[in-house]
Length: 303
Image (cartoon, rainbow, N blue to C red):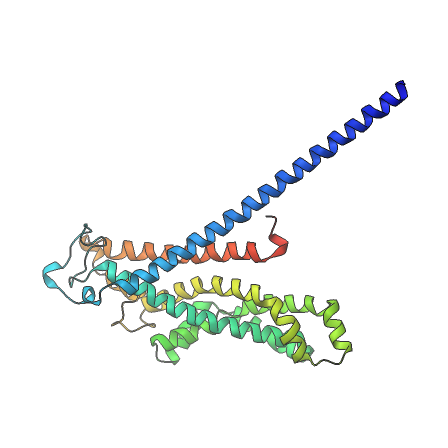
């Protein structure tokens, strides 16, 4: 009887331990779900704020960008939250239009840069050693020169303007992403489904377009989101030094460049609010990219 009682007591302990482990596992799953939900909500908030900036630029009346000398040099108020400049133009309207222009330039340049990175990464990983050496040499060449210097040279050669800035940013921001794509493709080449396609006589281009490229879409999407803030900052920097967009356009770089002449007179709002909005947009893209990387990468899903 004592033996059977000991067995029953031991079985009860094991059952209780198993139940405790299941409860702990459930709590861990709930914590993981909460973490992913928090990342999703944060990404949605960042995307919503960016959409709010874009919508505000579309709803802004173009008449607020015209000169009204009777309203010049007004400090921030309820009627003009960002104040007015030396020509009476509303700084909130100019800031929103400048951010919309920066978003367009960043999106166009980032998209071109992602396409270049994807093509060169696929070529380096699938077209043999010679192609790999050439692409690797190009990546090292572009990474050895600072982005801003190369961008200014390309923009100067193309005559400045939106075309020069977009081409310059697109040709200077692909190397890091291309190296990442090359590494990812080299890992995918050893996968079983790729080896089966090779044995079936499929061409390299068929394997790249049907098997490898679909696996690269999440990385390309995250890469695009993370390239855009760099493109926006570099566009603003090039425009600030006079090598970028036209002075007649309400670009953030132009607004900050023009405001430098009036800061000593006490008109602090000319540079403060546009600069803060630019940093806020860049930070939103950065947060959005980080959370997208967490959500689409299965290796980081438990972080």
